[in-house]
Image 1 (cartoon, rainbow, N blue to C red):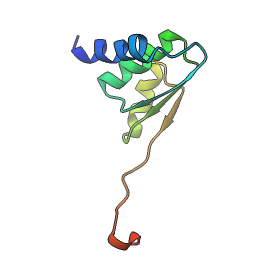
Image 2: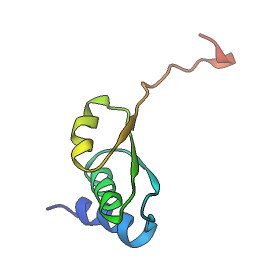
Image 3: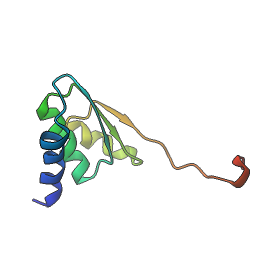
Length: 83
């Protein structure tokens, strides 16, 4: 096991301490983010929103408690606000 598991799980359970029935957003669904989602689930959060640029991560994130997923492809930015 890597430190990502204890970091994410500990951040949710020991630091954020989400109340039962709360909504939690997790930014980035790598090892730490997935562990944070699992910690939120264990703590009793009822709505866990996973946010990641990689849409393929949502199926795995569901196994760790994510109930919703937000993704967005990076947009090209241009000077003046228009391309």
